[in-house]
Picture 1 (tube, rainbow, N blue to C red):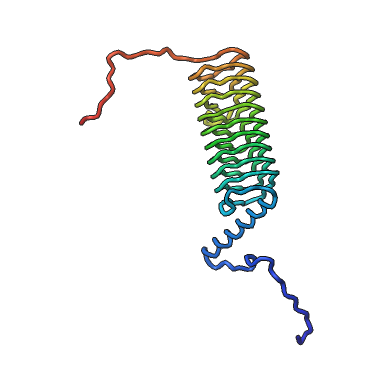
Picture 2 (cartoon, one colour):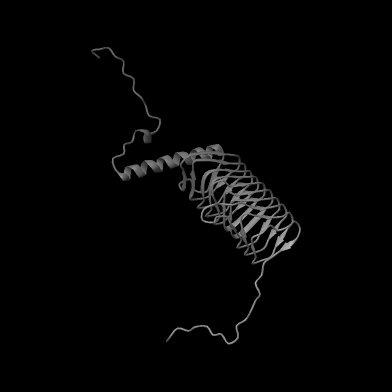
Length: 251
């Protein structure tokens, strides 16, 4: 009053903005309020959350129309979800773009990758950095991708590792297939061209090319290029050892 300085009060729009943090309990309480605010922002943007109390947004999210996000989803970094994307429970999304109509099934982890429209991922799938999927690509349970490009309509539905691979359109990768991309020093590329059918239990030893419309037989280890439109397989002769007995534990 003496200096005739006008004092104007500053009113905080939310109580949470002026709360202090003096211990871990108060820190957790503020984090809970922050999560609730981020969940509210998502719902205002048009997303449906199965449980707004069980989503953790640690970055920026751009959502399209009619997006559904189930419980216990972690969103980190910069994430874009196109129209009608559905994200199942216990999913981790980190720096990914997911095209319209795609479905991410439960317990999947996607990082630094790009998915086209209509993709189906998981459950229990891992899409590692550098992967890029076209339209209508299916990546099934216990399938891992690393720095792999997959074109439209291709599928790897079961128990498979695809690393440093370039896969064409309408390719079917059988269960238990592995691209052997690392020799301990160098990483090499596996190329699978349009329409190829990879049999179950294949080891594709990079660098190697599987030709257009080629087929590889189940249980094969492919070390040389497979020609277009042909069946390529490797099989050791099966034998039976007469008189052999399984070892038994002493009672």
